[in-house]
Image (tube, rainbow, N blue to C red; front, side, top):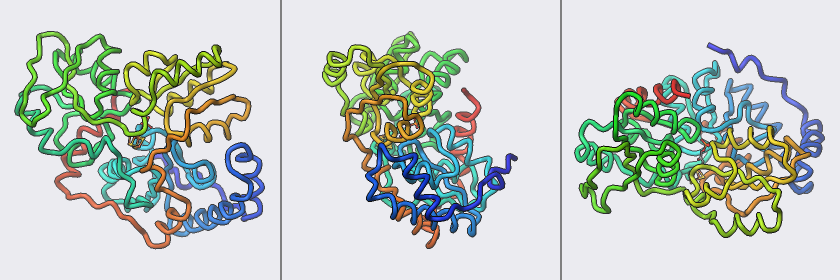
Length: 358
Ligand code: 13P
Ligand code: SF4
């Protein structure tokens, strides 16, 4: 096991933290906010060392927390992998509930803390366990792939999990195994985008539970109607308007955007893949179609990149994770993720399979 905890650095003083924050965040955080953030970062970093905790941060976290408090940063797939590699006693997950639950399933003996009890996700709440059971009754023998943006009880009903980083690979793997049909839940747009990339059909079941849609013999993804409340806000008109103004712009979109928006974009991928695309491409301007904080985080790391954002699209769930909450989480050891043993046991296999497929 990789001993990630022991690789961590000493705790910086408040003054040194503030100096580095000013250097790194000048373009994205007003200077007046930095002294308080430096103080909070110092306290969090001290306490996490005392508590033997590690802080994992999703790419959507606000810049000061993302760069000065988290030990490891990444997309859902990377953070799931990292959560299995830490030797820390406590994992503080600066992300949303489904991410913290995944870490708990992978490390049931560790204490997993989510700094807010309001960090949900419109995709995760867009499907219930009974919906999955009904789909399995309607399409017997068809493998069920659930996006990692689901709660653990839904994962427990699934055969495979995937993230936006490896959804295509997971479905392709199942097609290669000889399956003609794959149930892909719950993000309609990710399902449609994946089907398009793989040249497969896409259908939705009827509106009412048990309303079965007939599926032909061709390769078909059977999807679901949930959507990301942030990414569904981007539209084709916005992208075209930006292109008119800046014809040289490179448009980088998350695959939770609609297929129409993805068709107008140059690159699409998970948050990690989006960051990589910006870092690796040499373009005069980039337009990011995703949660706004990620643009700030990229700019602070790559000050030479010119980033356009159609903001203010902040995820209301990710947004509930603040530095104040993170400090409180470590002080009070809240909010602890607790899952029934049988859910942990049954959700483990699809998550392990997700981690194996790239
Ligand atoms: P990633 O897995 O790409 O980080 O996405 C998670 C998410 O919630 C996107 O909205
Ligand atoms: Fe869920 Fe969308 Fe927020 Fe991601 S951005 S956590 S998919 S609501």
